[in-house]
Image (cartoon, rainbow, N blue to C red; front, side):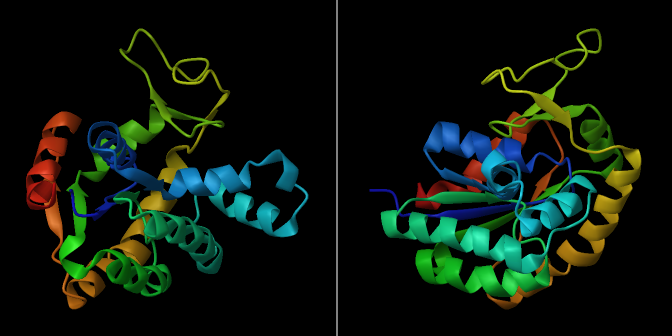
Length: 224
């Protein structure tokens, strides 16, 4: 039986964190804990749009800023508790995003899965490549999947290719710069904290998504 494993995927906005998480889910049955998807499910829930807290957090999210750490932590903590109870391997894309979140979330992940079964990956993708991906991407309001143009002549799809849901443009150039700055200021310091806990950051060089995924699996192989 495969030992339950937790993989954390870090990287700049647009580096492909959701793609790598999705590949682990599709090929190795990892449960995706996509922070953005979990949060979008809450923020865009029609039944909750009158909630002042949701309005505040959605304003931050839509503006390209990081959301209130306690709000994010509570949402993730509940989701991870459900996975822990089921003994399910998980992959977390883009979380924790701040030191506050890291100190709240990481001890629980390590306690649940064991230090030797937690793998933090860092996608080393240059900012300019991330910028191009962000500007070419729309996102489904229903399933949260990003939608990239298949070729320059195709343009972006009008509706989600997976579920047919409506799409929205997540960021513009100015918001991308805000997100890069917040990543440098608030997320990058987490890497030293993870190493202080005994976790070694695993760097994955920029390449085609499939090649990057093969490298991720190579590092996970002893647990699979």
